[in-house]
Image (cartoon, rainbow, N blue to C red; front, side):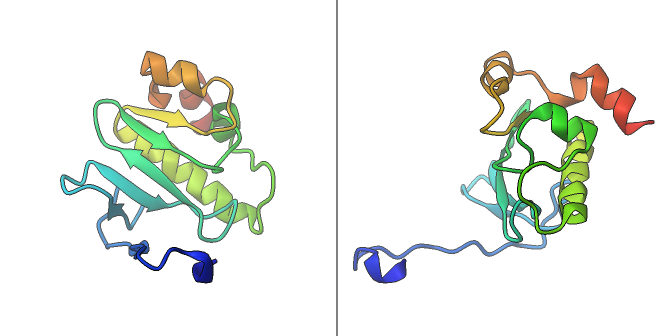
Length: 135
């Protein structure tokens, strides 16, 4: 709550620019080099965000876009979502980005996220992605 913030603290709130990241129409750079971005990923909550570290491969710090990678690939909305269609659209955008560039998907509830991070295992290299999204 803002009234509990230290008096010296002046946070900078998220202000998205009309700079797309693949199918995400807006983003906000967190670094001067724009190699770390925030993108809107509504679904779990209306104003949910995720962080993308742009490198090779890139890393998608997914928050609660899905509990795990399998649910993302299968397009299954999990947990709390006020609008399942909004969640599905966000999930589809993530998959499109993964088709455009190597992308390691890292949802925090997925016990396999650490292995994907350590192994730099991009989402696009999973055989399930090709099978499920093209069916």
